[in-house]
Image (cartoon, rainbow, N blue to C red; front, side, top):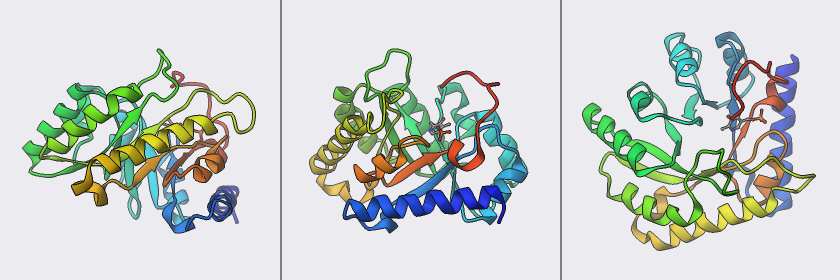
Length: 237
Ligand SMILES: *Cc1c(COP(=O)(O)O)cnc(C)c1O
């Protein structure tokens, strides 16, 4: 087995273990391979080794890999910061946009989806650590943004995503995961009629995905633990 295939198998096993520990059905949790800076060939190898969802966070890398058919056989999520002027390169080309964090972006996605005659699945990104430097909508603004998303005819709200602060020690992010899970539950309860659509909670990365699974994640976005360390050639997120 290649090191990549081994890592994928290891992370999948750890997800199953964490889910069982928490009394959850492991089938509820999907590994999203965070493929930033990886080549199309590496992405193909990951898919051949069992990755079913790729998460991309740069528009330019996304379009390059799409043009290469690198994601064939897998679904694609957009997980990075999305500028409204780049929406046209993403809407209709990915299965889920995980990072909608403002009414302006929501409206731009809705308009582009309308133009294409489609309904785009989205998550709302929560800035659960209230960090100035980070994208994401403040937790208290999530209910209003969710209501807007439900009114928009060409988007379908599927749930929430969060990127918590850099963890301080093991388990450091569990409180943030708990809070995000609670917000997710609140939104589901408030929005009775669309409840069945809202079943995605994206949280956890290489350092903390097991804790995220213990706290209810249905999508974990893992890069380094699959592909190894990235060269420091990109801006910090
Ligand atoms: C890069 C990235 C990840 C994965 O991070 P790792 O620490 O390498 O696992 C997850 N989510 C987002 C939004 C990312 O940009």
